[in-house]
Amino acid sequence: MNRVRTAVLISGRGSNMMALVEAAKDPAYPAEIVCVVSNRADAAGLDFALANGIATKLIEHKAYPSREAFEAALDAYLRSMKIGIIACAGFMRILTAGFIVGWEGRMINIHPSLLPAYKGLHTHERALADGAKTHGCTVHHVTAELDAGPIILQAEVPVLPGDTPETLSARVLKEEHRIYPEALAILARSLQPNTSI
Image 1 (cartoon, rainbow, N blue to C red):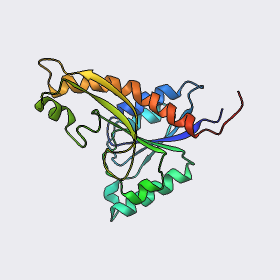
Image 2 (image 1 turned 90 degrees about the vertical axis):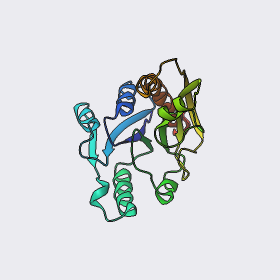
Image 3 (image 1 turned 180 degrees about the vertical axis):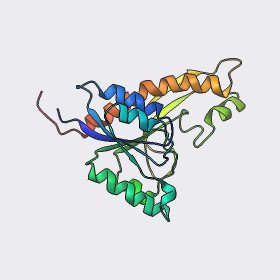
Image 4 (image 1 turned 180 degrees about the horizontal axis):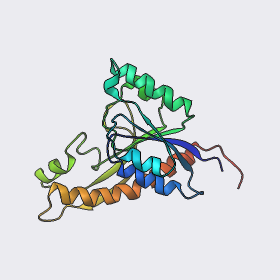
């Protein structure tokens, strides 16, 4: 089986990246995590990737004169690594349409809400403020419109009496770690050439 070469983009601790790496340790998993890229030098997830024998790359957005120059460097690195799928996992940069179109159908993101509800930031606080009864997470394709791409998988959690943003976040994060590897596997299988069984 040709596993699909996958890059994970992070900006921080990379807990979802860790879930993808653990899933990909199974030789039968259809995606191979070949590199982890961060736009921040202090991203703790880089150490985890190195400890697991995965190539890491720091491409600091602040080192470039423009968003386009940063994205050109990111794109060049990903193509040099022959990447088939980009998985964004807490990557805190909004990418331009010019970058996204080059990876259309091959770039996914995990978002801590049941999209289309609560696009953007502070999803847990907003759900609690609205008195939502359910909350959750979504894996979706990345498109030029923020948090609006086609949905691959969602997981729902109840909002409990007395929840704080922290307790709700912890419950959602557990589901994120479950569905992100599932969603990546679904996409990787769809991109693999048809082979006889």
